[in-house]
Length: 218
Ligand SMILES: C[S@@+](CC[C@H](N)C(=O)[O-])C[C@H]1O[C@@H](n2cnc3c(N)ncnc32)[C@H](O)[C@@H]1O
Image 1 (tube, rainbow, N blue to C red):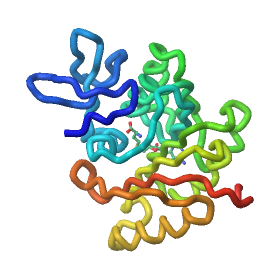
Image 2: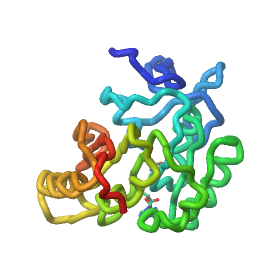
Image 3: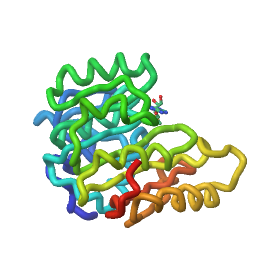
Image 4: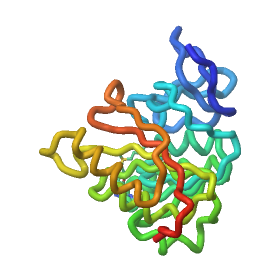
């Protein structure tokens, strides 16, 4: 098993089993060890699944992150445990209420009740030049969301997206959906890695990409 995990993420033993963990206040009933590390459930987190599958995401430990589709904070709470300033965008009011409670214990986590398709509505709050945009929005037009939020990335920043096939088209073959989404993403990104997440999340594709240096920002 590789131990090549980013700073702030470790493999720890919980109930006799090695699991990914970050250090922080528990959020969703996950077990915590005596040193304050809490298990990160890859079955409930696409980013957790990417780390379990050993994708090289390159987190440095103090990165600025824009997280799109934060829901009630399951995954973004782990991100805020190991990253620097973490902006969490979610457009549904109910999960955002839970997200606010998650942010109470994390001074570097900034919840934003906003629509990720309209980045101009939060551009005055979110700093530019971030190291990461992490995206997990279950909505049609996932490539468009990623392209519109590219403006927040540093030139050497990265997009880490979990693409859900069924959010684009419930009937189409997921491989065809992914191929179309990747084609759209190439308008503004160079794709550096992809991986199916089916072991943990059916019909999801992980995409790692870098913003292209052209002037195609929207
Ligand atoms: C699969 S859930 C996210 C789960 C979360 N990333 C986690 O792992 O803890 C997808 C979320 O995206 C949100 N969402 C969908 N479209 C959105 C949009 N246009 N702007 C902001 N949030 C959106 C949904 O409300 C939902 O909470």
